Image (cartoon, rainbow, N blue to C red; front, side, top):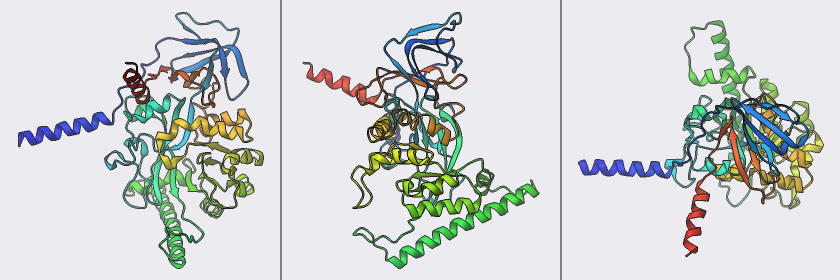
Length: 432
């Protein structure tokens, strides 16, 4: 019996080690740090050459030239280098899934179809191996979103350095996630439901969603009229959505899904963000009229229709920009957080297909911060914002560029990761 218990403990310890990264979170900033002589990409304003960026207590205190540095300031020469705000991936399952094929490392789904009380951040694993590899490419922030069911739960904006999920979370309840049903009948080899069954399922799902919001309003009314009303955590979680403090983030790619979601949000008087947004270019007037921003679900997507141009997914960001729709670019959520490290290349490809280069950079820094309600802290290199930034040897959106150092709230980030350790390991194998 004792041997069996010890064996189980050993297996648990081994599994824990497989899911834990050895990188140590950065220590709290204890003195001013000045990055001197580099090119500062503020994003919100002009790009400054041969400039200085000063930060203290985790906040940016000065940006530019010709100002005096405080006493006991650590001066770091970055001549020939570039400083960018940390990029923000606006839709991931970061920290919720480690290995897609291993069920024990997957914690992004909750049972049931209605879970507004689910908080993604409490399930995040701060020791995920994916976090350091993502940081190494300049992505220092992300939205961790739950999935499953129709109303999946609430996402959180995370900074990718810290000991606990509390350290990582910079905005809890960034959005309530809803998976919108397909509005049109699908006829393909993999579809087993008849047209009649698909329509019935769609109508049932939409009716249920309307019913849930109606019940939530009744609960909210009861709570406001009588604070002693028995608290139900599911309905309590809906109150911030109904008040407009938390937007609903609806996963929808097709035009009819987007139109239906906008109509629902207008009817329910709630804030809406569209995630996915492949057909957003066809709904531009509607989205602009109701101030609905779009989180584009990656640029590296195949065309959805046989008559779409092969490069349409690459051009959508430029088209939305010309049409005046507020948008940002996320990595492709279909492949999980392990692909978040490729976020800058999604923006770089969008720039190669017509999106202005400055707009492309904003699409993965300032714009997602604005859409997710954290632009007062991150997204650009402005005085008063968090010193969450990266130092690179070139344009952060280009594949050849290397990120040399990063800071999260002024904390120096350990730039090691599993990919680098494996590269070093196998370099030794072939050096003999």
